[in-house]
Length: 376
Image 1 (cartoon, rainbow, N blue to C red):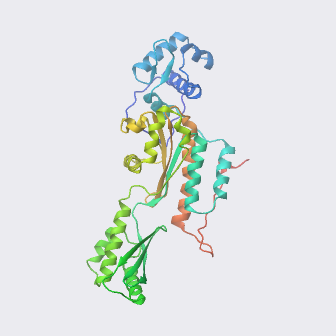
Image 2 (cartoon, rainbow, N blue to C red):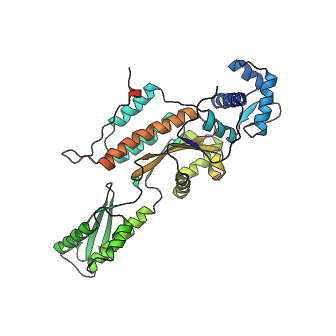
C-alpha cells in the first residue's frame, strides 16, 4: 500500500500523471530495490522478493505502462527496469511516506549540537558535517542572514591624521568596518557626537526607512557622508543572495561520474546563489527536493538536491542541503535535512532573535529535548 506523501516536501514543478494503486506499489518497489542494490529490477525478482499476489506477466504489463508514462526505463530490451528522474519524483512526492531517523541517531546528533560551543561558525560546520555523514553525500549550509538588514549602531574612531575607522553594527550581530579619509582631521569627541546623532536617528531602521528619513534631517557634511556610507552597506547586504557557505562531504560524491558536475554547484557561489534564489521564489515551507535539476540546471542533471530553509521566517534564515546521486536513500536524507533544519531553527531563534545574554555577554542557547527523542 502506498505511503502517505510527505506533507512538507516540495518536489519540482513537473506535472505527474496519477497511477493506479498497484502501479504505485510496483514503482515504489522498483525505486527502493534499485536504491538498495544499484541493479535493474526484473518482474520475476519483484514477485519473488516482495511476495506479490500477481504473476510476472502482470508485473511486466505494469512495467510497460510505467515505461510509457516515463517513470521507469530499460538499459536494453532484456534488462530489468530502473527508475527515471520522473519516477524518482513521483516516488518522493506521493509514495515516500513519513520517515524519521532512528532514535539513537537523533539522540547522537542532538548531543553533538548540545556539546558544541555557542558560536555561529561552529554550528554551521557541525550541521554541514552531520548532514554529510548521515546522508553519505555532500552537503552545504549557508549562514543565516536577515531578510532586510537593520541598523543597530555606528561608531567612528580616529586613528591617525585624517584617517577614521567606521564600525557599523547590524541587528543580528554582523559588523562591517570601513576606513575613511576625511577632508581634514577631526578630534574624537567630534566624531563621537556625529555617531551618536546618527544612532539616535536610525536605530532599528532598514535601508529604505533611512533613505526616507534623511530628507527631513539637517545633517552636517560629516554626518551626511557617514549616512551615505551606511546606506550603501545596507543596500549591498540586502542584495547579497547568500552569505558564508559551509561545505562538507565532497569526497563522498567525487567517485560517482554522474555527480561530479555537482561539485561545480557547490564550489561556484554565483551558480549556487541562482539555484537557491529560484527555489526560494517558488515559496513553500519545509523540505524541497530537486531531482535531475528539474530541467533547469545542467549541473544537477544526474543529481538530487534535498534542501530546506532554517531559521525564523521574515527574520534570520539560511539554507541547508544534501547533494548526491539521483539514486539515494530519499526517506533517510529527507528526514536528516528536516531534523537538522529544526535544530538550526531553534539555535537561530535564540542566537539572533531572543538574544538572551549571561553576565559574561555570551549568547545563551539551550537545546530542548523533543518527546520523540526521549526514551520512554
